[in-house]
Amino acid sequence: MAIPWRLCWRWTTGATSTRVLETICGFNGRSATFAASSLRGTGAVACSGYEGLSSRPVHTTSKGNYILTRHKSRLLYPTPKPCCCKRIHSDAKLKDPFTLAQKDLNHLYDDIKKELFVSKSELKSLCDYYFDGKGKAFRPMIVVLMARACNIHSNRDGDLLPGQRSIAMISEMIHTASLVHDDVIDGSDKRRGKTTINEVWGERKAILAGDFILSAASMALARIGNNTVVSVLSQVIEDLVRGEFMQLGSKENENERFKHYLEKNFKKTASLIANSCKAVSILVNSDPEVHEIAFQYGRNVGIAFQLVDDVLDFTACASQLGKPSATDLKLGLATGPVLFACQQFPELHAMIMRRFSTSGDVDRAWQYVLESDGVDQTNYLAQRYCQEAIRQISLLRPSPERDALIRLTEMVLTRDK
Image (cartoon, rainbow, N blue to C red; front, side):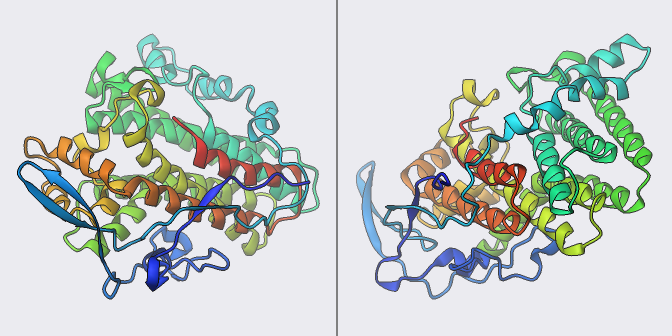
């Protein structure tokens, strides 16, 4: 008997019955697929305009000596009703992803440290700092499960090929190097509940440590000996850089702003997961359709993961996150909850364009988000991406690993850190 998909919300839009996310992001209500052809390989979602969507006054808030009439978001008018999403997975009891992948991840950090072996003690300390075995190893876990699922789908046993095991390791190395560089760019002082490398050793050494981790990952990638895999995972590095540049900018037009946000999320977060999943499928199967299934699963889970991460910046305390909350606002970033809240509180538009740089902007933006349904709508959007991830992975032959990847989507949506 299959365990039911987690309780979610069915959203209605009053008299209009308009499913606005289908309009904006190209979701199809029956299959949760994306209409945009640009979906493949880019991460961008073609967004149509919000024009023509009705808005109506729904509540008032008192500010000082005056009353402001607010309009419900033009994106969604939520009337939450509990429902169970369509079960599209097998009737087998879904396996715990961490348990299934544990055997292949036992020596992950030891293997990484071997790749980073250097005689200079300070550089070794820098490189080993985040590879202490206390990370979630979320990306390698997905890669291991996808590799096993693709192996079984391709009429092999589930055991990992040496190249697939290397890709799981490389995914964690690339991810960690990007965190080291991100912390320098953002001036962060906390990461994973501990002081950042740039705070302990300084920015220059932190940058060099990140570069060294990337170089070691590149050498491990070259040893796999598959040019297609090298090309696929090299795309991740390009996407990380382009995504960081996208984060430095903003869009005046609301439609373009949301598209920009989702594409940035793909490049900075989902590309690594999507292309790592694709890479392990390439090593075992020559069918482009299988490669695309692996890529699309990783892409949709990755974007959902980042959407939930953006929600947690508003809903989780610093002790849960391992880093200060409201970080994104303080960095001048308008994430999903803010962009949705902007539909109800137009004052946010000017704050977004000046990147919350005026005194009081962060506090006011925070309050607007909490008074809006921006958090709920962002969570709903993450659900839709997870539904599409389930649809994609369900195209593979049933296996415990495939079902664990299905369950993983629920864990992405319900995580609190």
